[in-house]
Length: 489
Image 1 (tube, rainbow, N blue to C red):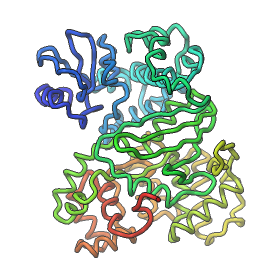
Image 2: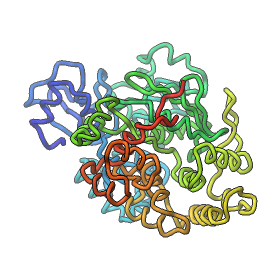
Image 3: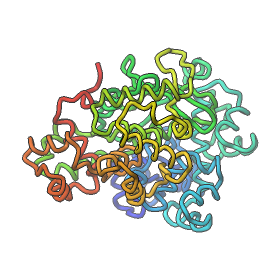
Image 4: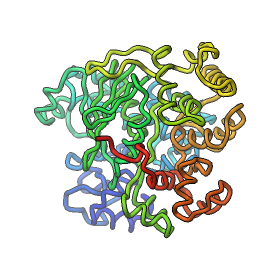
């Protein structure tokens, strides 16, 4: 969008928050870059230039606005609905891959050379993978500076900087303030935050309907790993450097996030996975506008706009849970998963009680004796084949997954039918166009709404909803009285 100057100028003048994260406004006369919704008086059109990323603004010598804080805007929804190499690279960078594995590791996961990845990102985003990762490190550093009392040296290394000097130089360059000045400007209450606990605000594009989002997570929560408590969804997180516990609660203009991390270096990854879990970078206006064009879906969208797709923080975990949920009720699937957690999960200490384990890793589940699993023999074979392939690395499920290719590989596994592959594509892989025509709830909703109820006919009818069929699934499910559709009380 940043190449459409006229459209960008209109968005800036109207202070349209919907475009936050889509592009960034750099002001030539001040050397500052802002989000489109910045509350200051808009500059003259001839003094504005537009960039597709904060990293590109920083590369061009602009520093972040202190009023609108463009580094904390929602991420671009492009990286959610696109499946090309650039989108997959952006999802991996957000997950901290460049900091952990370098550009060569990023390229290897994508199946390209480092040079190809660099060229593609520069062409589309005006910044290479190192610059994009640097911008993310700066944002992480700011969060740690403003919300913790960690010494600056610890903040530097936790944010992913290789040296304190680089940390200081980057913070000054990006924010036009020293790290100490940033901390001094932070609200006093954040300075007194509980040691080891981070309180964050996760932004999103309005509207956001929390009912099905948190209702689904709470209704399917695995005891010991997840729970709903005091108006918040809580769960344990398996992270690159340790584990964490997160609490997520819906608020009118943000998601309140409380993080307890075993290692502060996991902050960036934890935030990225929480945003992905709640689908916070979606563009609900674009999604609902497409679905509202269908006269059958229009009343459902108008009744409760802004539905998101509840996703996952661990793709392998969700795939295992999808197999456990084959042809059984939600309650039975939770029971099966809870038994695996109690027997094979990694114990964790939850200061608030209630959460006891990390979900078992594929390696731990691959060692399980199939005869101890309380499920039909055919499903045992499906389960053991899946976890063995995940543990051996023969099957990769992650933010870098190619959606059509991975779905085809899942369908090739014994016991994997269209429903299992499609629900993994929808919730684990994040495909916004994944559809569940064989799902019982979808077929029931289709009959009630006068839509075709056979899978083939419903799929043909749903072509008009593309590329947002995963969101259409949420609206169709919402016609039922199942607990997944309601915010827990």
